[in-house]
Structure formats: structure tokens, C-alpha cells
Image 1 (cartoon, one colour):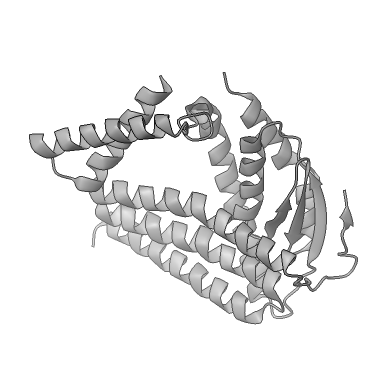
Image 2: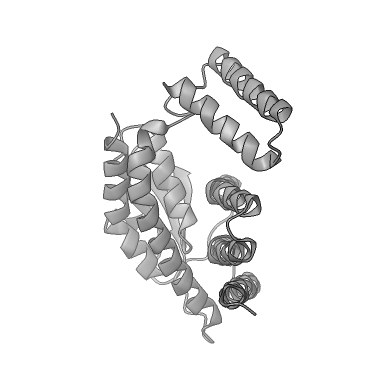
Length: 158
Length: 107
């Protein structure tokens, strides 16, 4: 199932990038997609980390929320930058990470970094060292809202 | 100019404005880590709005699909690169400038 989905996604990717719909090129694309999946299977990378289809549903719920957070915090950072006094209050904080899997922690750490104003510096097993541009940003993270959402995201598979 | 042109122009202008703000931030910020935060404005809102503007311009075509793939690439690659930079700096002992009460505390 995962292999089939990986092959289909690769083929769609090929078609989108090529833009040619001649029978020869479509066949070549299909053969390549299947060959890549065959190689990937030998490398044992067609697993929940390499091709995480299990998370498709929860990603569709999590990404819009993350997108809104990114826009909000990018706007906040932009305001800080153009403020005449440059009101920054950089802080290092340790943020607990409650995800069970490595993938969940990566999603959380990357979400923190992707949100302007906070960068994950060290991603440990159950807590991250985060650099925040403002005290407010650090406190927003300490409230743990994003952590809970990523944990729910991770738990939603099966 | 069609309405789509206006929308696309507004998105491109806004994206460009955020890129400029990010660049100004990189010049104004005091140290490595804080400059990074300014850069992330460019790679999120700056790049995002420019790509959205170009997608409106391209309409429902393969070019738009490629732009969407590009957006996804930035979305996944940029936090990884940012984290790699931050971690490298931290391990090499680059000390962040900290604000009032910003020491390594919290939870």
C-alpha cells in the first residue's frame, strides 16, 4: 500500500515536472517511478518516515493552523524590525516536547523554526533548546499549544 | 489589467516588501541568532507571497504546480537549514546576546 502510494506520487511528480504527455515519456516516467520504489525498498526507506502517508489526514488539519501561526509571527517579527527602537528581548528557553516518535519531534522542532521569531537550537529527546527573538515569543511557546497540536498530529495515525 | 493581475501584483509587492523588511532586519539585529529570525521572515512570508503572486499570474497550469512544489520545498528545507546553522553556531560556542531575564531558564 505504502509502495503503491510512493510509486503513484513519484509518477505524478514526474508528470508535473515534465509537462509532456506523449506515450513514450509517460511510460518512461512510470518505469522510473517503479524502479525508484524498488531501489528504495531495498534500502528500506519506504517506511513511515520515508513516505509518511499515515499523517496525510492530520497534516491537512495541522498545516492550515501552522500557516496561520507563521503569518501571525512573521507579522510580529516584521513589526519589531521596522520599530525605531528595535524592541527585542532575546531569550533562550527550554521547551518540553511530548512527542513519542522521532518524526513527531522533527515536526515540532521544524514547526518552531519555521515560525519566525523562534529557532530550535538543540532538539533533545524530551525537550528543545529554543532561541526566541522576544520574551513574548518565548512565552507563547511555553504555553505548549503547538506542542499539544503536534502530539495530536502524531497520535492521529493508524 | 484584469482583476487577477491586480491580485498578483498586490501579492508580489507585499512579498517584496517583506523581503526588504527581512533584509533590513538582518542589518539591524545585533547578533547571529537574532539575524536568523529576520531571515525567517524572508523565507516564510516573503517567499510565500511572491510564489502566491506568481501562481495567480500563471493560473491553473503546470507552472503553478511547479511553483507549489517549490513552495513545499522551501517549507520543508528552510527550517532544516536554519536549525543546522543554529546548532552549528551553538556547538561552536557562539553566545547569544540575551535580553532582560532571557537566560536559559523557563521550563
